[in-house]
Amino acid sequence: MNEPPVVTAYAPGRVELLGNHTDYNDGVVLGAAIDRGLTICGSNRADGIIAITSSTMGSVRVPASNLQPLVEERWANYVLGVAAELSSSGKGFSAEISGDLPAGSGLSSSAALELATALFLLKLEQRELPPLEIAKLCQRAEHRFVGVQSGLLDQVTSLFGKADQAVFFDARTEEVRTIPFPEDLALIIAESGKKRELASGAYNARRKETRAAAELLGVAALRDVTSDELNKRRDLPELLWRRAAHIVEENERVWRAIDLLEAGDGAGFGALMNASHESSRKNFENSTPELDLLVSIAQQLPGVLGARLTGGGFGGATITLCERGSAEAAASKLAARYFERTGIASRVLISHIADGAQ
Ligand code: GLA
Image 1: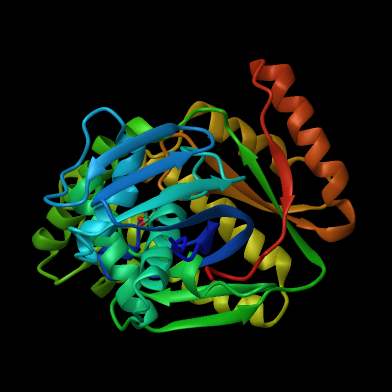
Image 2: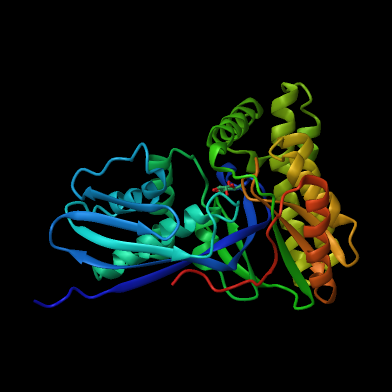
């Protein structure tokens, strides 16, 4: 008997450069795909079984018909959710997941796994879909099978990423465009060592709070408010005002950052990253003591232009913008000082902006 053909798909992780929690508020965001990711390799099966193996998480076998989220092996829900969305149900497959993108580190292993699965299944079925449709079906899988009401930033960045380019995404108009990232700048990722997997409740709560703020302000989404307008609305409940301020100012920072990137103004871009983190800390309360510490250590190192948490927050990683010539020294000092203060051996690395999913 002939062996079924083996296919492979890859999707990278991402960093969010600016535009924190703006995506589900119809806002704008700047991200970049990184040089770490997840690969799925496998083939069709004739017995109607989905068999998934992960080099780090273990393995599961479930019937392909009537797919439901698993209660225990929750890591597999990203794969099963995408299979359900693609309505590949009924058809079995074997899939082996491998890669160098750790789960729960804030670099969007979730979206990478969803996208790698989607591209893998589409190849298996010899089907094609427009990229934005693929991003959206992965997002739906996350909503339905994982329970995180995430926006589209992660999937769009991982899918549309280009080497040495930042990805701009406008969640309302769905415009996606890449912007060259200045060659003399480097990005340093520092993992806080605190996983963000239990953060889905806090994430969904922020989504509700920002929605409530938009309703009180009488707009379709916080995208429609400027910081001047918001400053005149101090009648809002204080907590909702702060949540709204974060989103409104993040959008404004992204618009400014595009011009700064295009002008190669790393110092200006870094200052916006610092302001973004401060707003996360004070207004959005999605930082943690560990993320604050990584950011404040980084901000004092020679050559560093700015630092902030990246992605959802509540744990995960920070991103530091640094002059390229100082990046090696800054990364090793950041790891050493963080270890001195916390005892946590954080993974700190200089990240390269890479091509998106294939
Ligand atoms: C997570 C979500 C994204 C986005 C970021 C915060 O990464 O998956 O959709 O909301 O948080 O900007």
